[in-house]
Amino acid sequence: MFELTNISYTYVGGVSALDDVSLRVESGRSVALTGANGCGKTTLLRILNGLIFPTKGEYRFEGTKIDKQALKDAQFAKTFHRRVGYVFQNVDSQLFCGSVEDEIAFGPRQLELSEQECRQRVDDCLALLEIEHLRTRAPYATSGGEKRKIAFASVLSLNPDALVMDEPLAGLDASTQTLIIELLKKLREAKKTLIFATHNEELVQTIADTRVRLDFGKVVDVSQST
Amino acid sequence: MQVPQWLLQEERITPPKDRDAFIRKSAAALTYVLTKARRIDERQRSRIAFSTQIKLALTLLFVLLVAASRNFAFVEIVGVALLVLLATYEQEKLARVLILPIQALIISLIILAPSLLLGQTRAFVVVPCKTFLTTTAISLLAYSTSWNRFTCAFKSFGAPDSALFIFDLTLKYVVVLGEICLETLEAVRLRSVGRNRRKAQTLGGIVGVAFLRAQKSAQEQFDAMTCRCFSGKYRRFKAPMRKIDLLGVALCLGLLSLFIYLEIAIRCSN
Image (cartoon, rainbow over all chains, first blue to last red; front, side, top):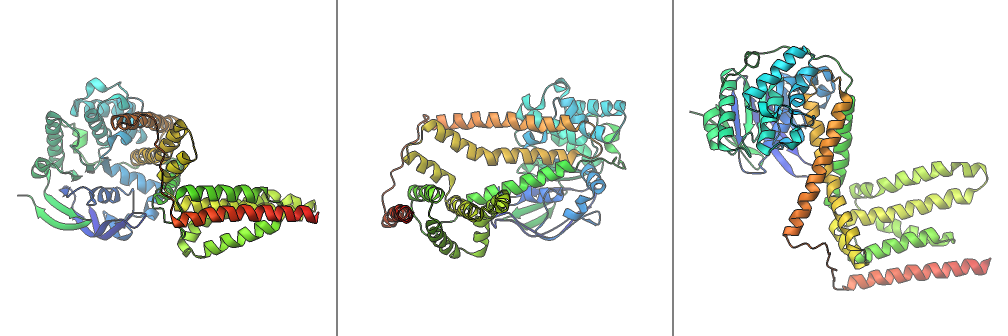
């Protein structure tokens, strides 16, 4: 599904974030990116989502090269973004609607699903993330953990084939962490592709089929979970 | 936990067409501005490493005298000196310094073009020259000096603390707010997977989120500064005078003397 070949990424000012990284993620697999802060995990996830493009190397999604040119085609870009959901590390930036239910319905409404179907998805996502009580609240007025749940719900409502997550458990209490891990287990069983950057060992052990360890922008170890 | 059936199935939806280039273009424009703003942080040391106070005084004096000068010989002399200084810069750095002055030069030439029709050829030459020189001097100062040094230099010139505080926070938040807006625009782009019938509402949401987060960040930054004993007063930074700074003072005096001499000369010739 995702294929990165010898990609490198250098930020303005010459800071190298990724150096000659190659990675292949098959559909339905789950991959954990681990490594110290600043090792290039977020940069790699942003490349996978087509938010930035490698300065060297090639990135292909289901055989199609993802670059600036490819994403200029609005239809392709929309299909790509629908199929690859992204939960930001900083969920504050991800929420921009006036109420939680509008936030979750934003994607389905754009797909021109019927209003009844949109409502169904909103209800299901609210129930799934146990945030029914937040339905009419403004997302910015909720707590950090609640914002992360809302961000998850807003991405899941699009029913993406692949879910890319940057520190999905950051800032969550123990019970919410358990909830998210259970949800990811179910999604993995449903053959969704999961790629996430994390420092949480439990998440890696429970969810990941493959662990990719990065160090100073290089892949230093790829191991299969037992 | 009961996962809904629709979430367990693969969907093949053809997204409806929509005109939403504004998100992509806004994000691209913001990225460009932020890239430039971040580059400002990698400031280079200038060729002559005067203290910021001297650089600021010299630049302000330069701008003032070039603008006030009625003798074009003064403009020519300082222009040559400035061009010699620019000639010592590498090509890439030179391009960064000159991009703004060249834009200013072109605009001033366009504005003054009608003066040619009225026979005012002198104004057509003098004003763009002065514009180019003054903007180049400011661009050089901005390129070679970091923002926190500017704050120090302004304090040395007696700027009030409240003005410095606003200046300091504003500069920091140009980048911070830009990043907030960019991240939110990216989130909108990632979830713009079809036809958005509520574009105005979405745009309002982005602006609203940016405003609320800016307010929150400013409050948090002020609280953090208070917790670290910031009382609203900036201390005056007393940098020791170095030999190179004496050269800067001499340059200021030389510039002023040249200006007075040439102004007297032009009066006498009249």
